[in-house]
Length: 100
Image (tube, rainbow, N blue to C red):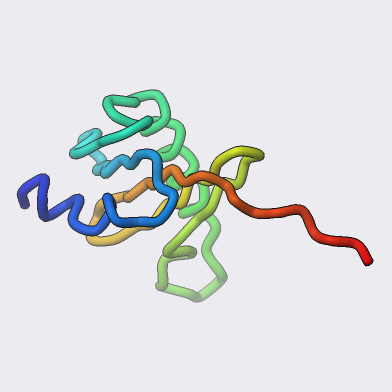
């Protein structure tokens, strides 16, 4: 699969500032603030491996398809598809709730 095919659509995600496409063999593609960021790739893969250990009893389905890591200024959105892990770093534009 070509890099263009792997990253199709990732550039168009609103507020994205970088992305990683990761397999068990390592980083397949990266751009923006996550370009060549092997450390973040390793941390995200460890989080995915840990989350995959939590299965509901009797279920054969993957325990999750998408995971969000929400920090003050940005959000990592992690999606698993076709033996690949897609990580997109987005600006966190979430506003504080308004108390009336």
